[in-house]
Length: 252
Ligand code: C2E
Ligand code: MG
Ligand code: MG
Image (cartoon, rainbow, N blue to C red; front, side):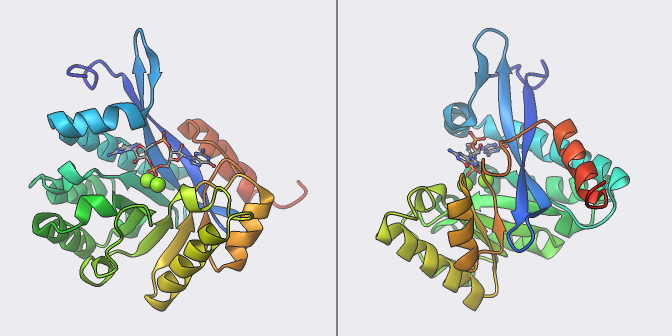
């Protein structure tokens, strides 16, 4: 992994996030891929935890942040109007004293409105950690959005929602998987949606694969959805194609 950045082995793919009321794409999440010369594509689920342990995540994450903001600016030039690009940030990155400056530089350098960037952090990354919470407060002050990713999977400290300045909750995919058959999953999904709305936070349901799941989550009040039902993570050129199709008048 040591020379993978310089060797250009990382790339970002993007997965659409749609507004459930009209199924328009309002943003994307950037997801990293490691195109290893001999092993092929390595999943982030495999290398991110290792990179966290070795500290390499700081450099990899910085690359991903810069690349996603560069791409966001390129899309803005072609498709004016609000659009949010989500970037995952690991716990180790939140403790990096350079992070807030890096984010400020990435948005200013690309002339992005801060709300065009959403930083995704997991509960575990911010739980009981004063330093991480300070970083989140500083990020929020920049005006970027802050999403709590995989929400509901960690030992959810609900107090976290009072101290941590998040703007959005992302319901974890595990609660969406069998939402139509498992009563407990749908109970959790309902509770998270109600909590988001009571706290005036945005809500995203992850891992939607079927029309039935889409309907159930929309009826539960989720504002946004993301999942294979609309699209798998795709290269940036495909996002541009989808956005071009989206702005064409219906039927043309
Ligand atoms: P995540 O941030 O929760 O991203 C969502 C994951 O769910 C992605 O996996 C996505 O491909 C997958 N997914 C989306 N919709 C569906 C669906 O309908 N069904 C199923 N089965 N899966 C779906 P991916 O790309 O393998 O990423 C895994 C995790 O790796 C991410 O979870 C995130 O925690 C981490 N990650 C990815 N890119 C980065 C990055 O640039 N930086 C950091 N720190 N972590 C990253
Ligand atoms: Mg994420
Ligand atoms: Mg997630």
